[in-house]
Amino acid sequence: MLEWDETVLRALKEDLGSGDVTTRITVNPEKRARAELLAKENLVLAGLDVARRAFALVDPETVFISSFTDGDEISKGTVFARVEGRAVSLLEAERVALNFLQCLCGIATLTRRFVAEVAGTKASITDTRKTTPGLRSMEKYAVRVGGGRNHRFSLADGVLIKENHSRAAGGIGEAVRRARAGAPHPLKIEVEVSTLEEVAEAVAAKADILLLDNMDVQRVRESVALVNGRALLEVSGGMALDTVRTFAQTGVDILSVGALTHSARAMDISMLFETGAS
Image (cartoon, rainbow, N blue to C red; front, side, top):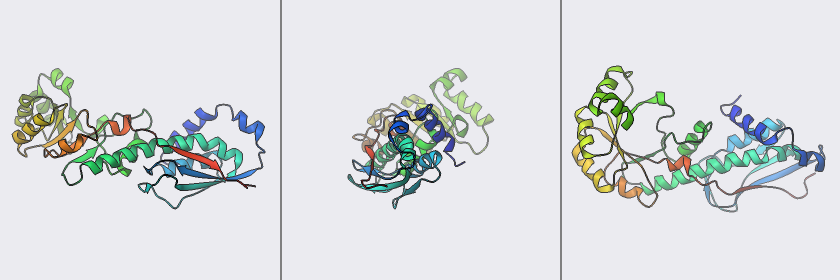
């Protein structure tokens, strides 16, 4: 099985239930068909292989053809893929293939827009763990397709001391000290801070990365000056397309955008049978 087959199979089972009753009673099982996948708006393509697997897992004899690759910018009205096989197989896989494509293209498209907004600054656009349960690997893949970077995939991938960790440990300084003593060597230690006083405390504790949480632009600028290169700086909270460049221009290193995965709009993509299919 390929990397995402289990996820695709689960989606197919959910959608098909006990069987596609409409297709079974209206379509000759021997009839063959060709269909086009059409972009109905401008988008960044992501999820071609996922769609291909949806059709193949329903019917291995289905042929999926595309001259495009993930990451390509597709214009409205472009037919970016064609599928050919038994009509019943195409109909049974259609919704699941489109659902994945629309979701992943939406994430890649939104990510590409954020990346374009910060072009020319040193800031990188990263995602968060605010992903659809069970779809994190796919959604983070779509972020990379759009030109963004992945933050932690799971809680095991890095030390990120949030406000509640600091409170439970007895303060930022103590939390960083414990993390430094107990974390595996390669892991960086990141600390969430929301005031200049906490910035100073985290720097004094020698945190590797400071997460500036829900600070306005002026507080971010002051934090950049206070840190003065002694730690990497990440900004998080309420990043929007119309404000992200202003934050990037403060000199921070990372802009984490939860909206890339939790609020990306599904792209408008359709599948239509070609006329004259045998």
